[in-house]
Length: 62
Image (cartoon, rainbow, N blue to C red):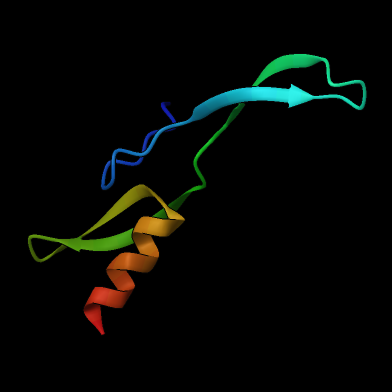
């Protein structure tokens, strides 16, 4: 299962983990995906979307 939001297209980003001695090892930051029920074409559909996309959709509804 990929860690990509189907609404925004956001995926994981990579960077360095830095220890106290500043040694660099690779790490990745995954998107915060949650399972939410949204209306798509008048039907309720369960979607794994990022929390940022869900907040934006809720804001647009109000």
